Image: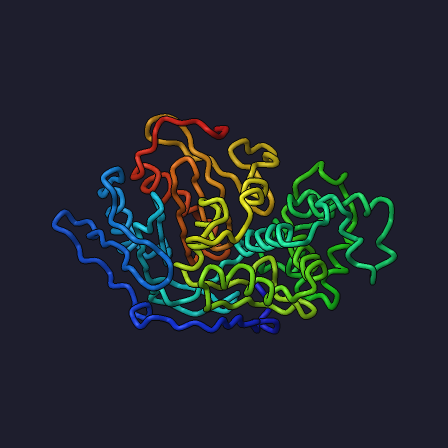
Length: 400
């Protein structure tokens, strides 16, 4: 989501830790090999919890090196970072140069390294979903089927019979039935997320939208519902969103360098405002591969990992794409003729976290293609390089 410049300030989360000196060193671009491909380099081992390894024999090095060479040689990709966890190890980590933004403000050309924070945009939605799950497993025992208006007593006029049918679960699956338009670009003032961001009462704006479909009957993408979920989380836990995220998610993952952009009536932008370093985002993805665990700590319950990422609906006329609790489901063909499902956190500008349980893999991609729809480069990376490199078995675990 692209924000008005007047609203660009951040809530900084500072977690006292000591960063190792080695972690401050930027990655060194690999040299070209005799074959003309970029030479593969094993990710360095740092004091950040990651166990690194070289490419195993089961991963095709040629595809990986061709991907690296393509991203370095063609600036139109504008991909900034690619990380791959496979077989419980971080096996690939490379950084590139390209044009970037900081929540809508141009930064020009940036030469990226592992210490630089990057916009996550709507990947933030999946983080909010995780925080809801942490709260559910930590004492908040409210049912997901409770009406969302129950959490907002300051709006008694909204507690109508019709609106009380809209539940927390409907907000998680984006099937609330509210009129909402994020189909136009985020530069367009008609975009409802932009209207919400600039509104004096953003929650009132979302909750008061006309109801145009029965709750649960239609999927409609809405950053407004994520903002409502974040507000519900604050009210249920009695803690600010940033404080709860710091204590219950970021600190257990060893994540200390965080920005959460935006100011919506005292809250950050729950739908789009997070900025993290690439290795830290990859840790978040790793939780969903390992049933909610990071190293020896259970950060999210295994039940919530399963419940929140299980496909809940299939998008209209797009059988290969589905949606869960603020997570997407995508299908990719395999070289052997099967298909593999990716549970994906997806953000504008082609920010991606692909969790592929059947392949024991997480792929993290950060890019600068905001409002650029000329081609889906992350889709190409998955189809042309990453999936073929992993040599998956002939499986078919999602509709094609």
